[in-house]
Length: 302
Image (cartoon, rainbow, N blue to C red; front, side, top):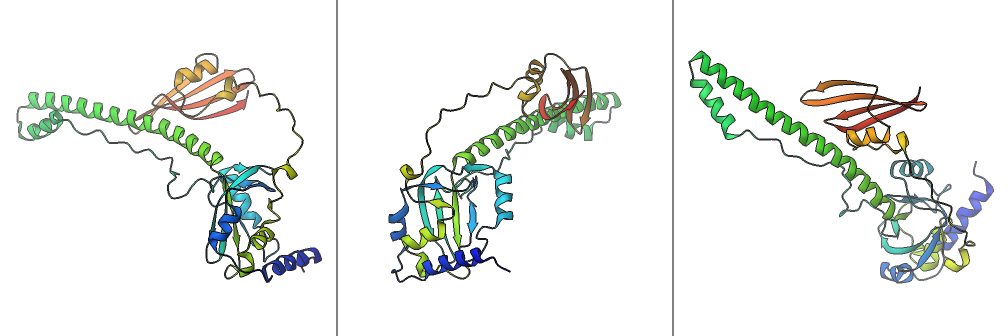
């Protein structure tokens, strides 16, 4: 059973949409809103998916989807932030209210952390040895040719391993870059309707009514809080707290105060890996390197 306040709120929005104001075009709405500064009343996720609100329903916000996007992408616009309306787009069943760029992840944005790498190719010497080995009948010569061929193949495998380690570090750095761009890319509110965008929503007042739970249109001066001094910056991280994936072995050892207590080397296919255990203060840090690059670590109490 719906609560009375929810019914009244829904009726209020419906009445706003059913008003007699003449429906406007997308261009009219863009002229009315784009370039204006508004204050948001809710955290917005760092993605071009933004949030979906349904003014004709209660609750108007699909909170499970909202929570999932905040958790997955982080927050790019905070409650109370003043931000520019950068674009209005009218679709068949919804209106996009884009803020601060509309959110990272549009067609032109690179959202994949993957970095490609070329496989080391056989040298001409390796190809020639493979052909000569098929024709050679002398046992001693065949043995020497096989040894040289094995050395060339191992060189190629080591080059591939170095390339993969370089790519792993590059992908970590690219993922950081994408995350930073998401936090600076703004967001959006998608105002969705059951069937089509009603004429009443295609007016300045109608769109404001649909967004009033999420956006304050009163202007920056009306909503700006009393200025407070910025809190002091936190001290820089050090020790285990400053570890980051993609670091080299020497960087890790510098942060943790010296070489590890024990190291367990092994091979994963053609990749050389090491598990290093450090004891620093009250913590035990276990670090996994691939070709000398930190790819994973855990911190536990001793």
